[in-house]
Length: 127
Image 1 (cartoon, rainbow, N blue to C red):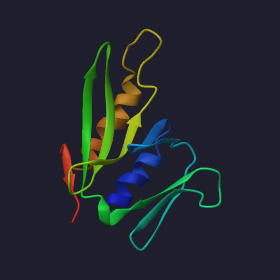
Image 2 (cartoon, rainbow, N blue to C red):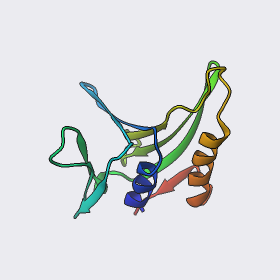
Image 3 (cartoon, rainbow, N blue to C red):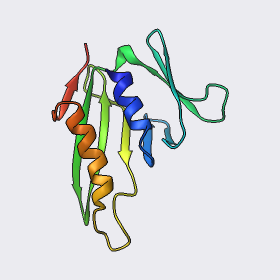
């Protein structure tokens, strides 16, 4: 199911994938990225291209749909965590607001539809 969620996120324009560690942050936009899996490794992007990522599916134990209130807006994302509940990957919905700081209903619907597709559960556990 992990690859399916990632595939669905890649179909949505303006998703920002963020891989974060203590020493580095990598940001990759979803627009026109492909996905494939070989054994436990999921590759997002073109392996021979200038920007791609490899995800060890065995290390991701859950996904969490997150709506986080911030000053003047709410952020929308799907976060992926390991067995220690450490975030491995975040997929952030960008361009959610217009120039007047109003939530765009079509962008919010994309988040809501994805949430509904996966059972309207905040946390999805992978086995």
